[in-house]
Image (cartoon, rainbow, N blue to C red; front, side, top):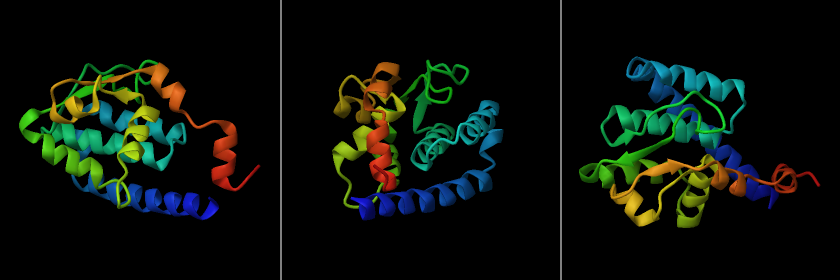
Length: 161
């Protein structure tokens, strides 16, 4: 269990470094002024690398026209770092899904992908419809809380009691 957790941490550390560089090279903060504030909030709150990767990937995907964000809010309990949701652009669905899949170690397990989005609180009514752009991924604090790691699970992942 500890090795698996360390491997996962190493994977996300490498991913976040690569995505930060890509985000900076693209000057992503110029695309939407609130993106920089979202990233700063992420850093201030010491958000896990996996969620930072998801945040920056959503930002870049919106800039590239792969998704359309729902109205933004201030960072707080009613959003994922300001994101209330998004809808996948139907004719860009495969490109968006490939971009998301590439974040995760291979072989990708569908449940792992869904759990990541649940922990961010961004869920569609039905996964297949969400990936195709037929329904939006919407923020649900109840889902986020329900899928948040328990203190015991977090300690076990770190090698603690």
